[in-house]
Amino acid sequence: MNLKFIVNDYVLIWNLLFQASINEKIHKLKQKLWINYKKEYNNTYRDKELILKDPKNFIPNDDTIYNIVLESKEYEAIKKKTEKYRNQVLKIWDENKKNTTKIIKSIMKTDIKPYQVFVVAEELDIIDTATPKDSKVNTIILGKHVTQDTSIKLLVEIIFKILQKEYKKYKAEYEEIVEAIIELAILNELPTRLTGRSYYLTGEPTLNYLKRQIYPYWLMYLGADKEEMMSFMMRDKIAFDIDKYAYEKELKKQDILGFIDFCIRNQKYIIKIKELEII
Image (cartoon, rainbow, N blue to C red; front, side, top):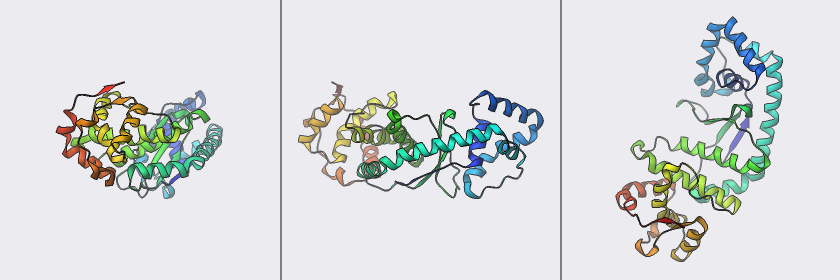
């Protein structure tokens, strides 16, 4: 998996202007701009899609607001801090890239598109994947506080948001099944392998029941045989009666899309099973 971490002035400025103010100085700068350049401020709001279509080559039709911000001491301080944050996130990725990429490939059994991660002020507390359809690059905007203790959590969240975006348009009528499977792959299995501690049944609470129904087939997809399933159940604190499930040996040959298709085709059979319990 290829992630490139970038600080881009236009992406950073747009988010400082149109997300919640991160401090009093930025709030006052925004107020000043709004009072003195209301028309230009409003027009700048429309730039988001244009910026993200081609971030490297974006040129604003009106650079009034951007120039004022670029020349301000408030922005100079924030950009310096954002560069430092970018280096911190890049270091975390570099330290975990090889192992994380190997695990993702093993779980998904398919390649993930490269993404440019535009780093903004961590105080914004956002991960935004709203890339225009005709964008020249795959982008994600990142501004989340991170410490050494939460570094793996941040990586998992970035990857999860990317894959949510990648599979969002996949048969929209089956949105919950797709979402449940992406959670099993990235919010559950990925951090479990990275840390050696089970993260199963974390994620969106409303998907827990569906994920428990899919879980036996998920283990087959991962390649667990009937004997190994017992250790997985104990690890993840999810119990089911193995003998009530026909072992689908072809699942381990499928990639994630093949597994999604299997669950969609067999959803009535999978979801009607109710003999599951958390132990």
